[in-house]
Figure 1 (cartoon, rainbow, N blue to C red):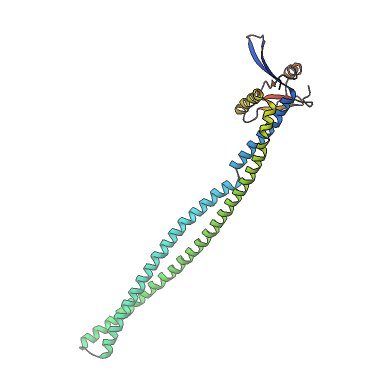
Figure 2 (figure 1 turned 180 degrees about the horizontal axis):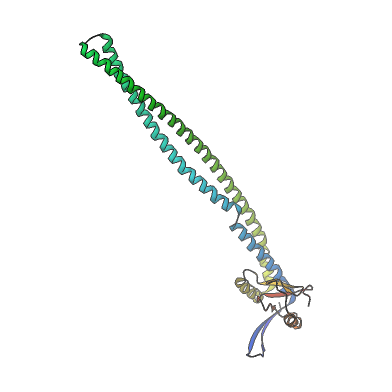
Length: 266
């Protein structure tokens, strides 16, 4: 391959030395193929890092985490109220047992009149206490039922959230696999193109690409730089027009390599 380099000197208010790289036009044209490959690889990398599933998964994970907290709290509250219900049932049963014993003694007629009168008063008090405890028991039972239903609702919501998260992760895996497959196919063409361009020109291209947001070479099309999208002035166009075909020219604005083609408008 014909690669030559040299430095030109021009006079102005101060001396400026510009090193000129020489490369056959066919090699320069291949830079556009290389740039297209690298641009697509950059696009694929960006797509992989910004898959719509990523944000959706983050939201789904947050939802699932929130439901886990809700479920723990609901189950704790349900357990607490079940213990409260067990205590209420026990209290009611104790009063019932005491009233049954008192009633049996009263029915037997054993004891002094004073004792029998006392049993009657105690049975009245026990009946009132039993009624109060049964009302409390009913209220606790209603809360138990409400909290049990709440636990079931959260469990169902969590199951649906987990299923949704699994589906999103599967979608992400499929999307990444497709992008990775395309990246491998695109990258497979790169070594042959690089070999056809040559180390000197590829080295300059890579240096510019690293400093210019991934775009190292662009087509000069209709007097406009394909890199910065600016239309070149007459002075720059005249300079490029007069440059030898094998001279690697660059945009004075963005410093990217300009590849001349039949559509450059020179």
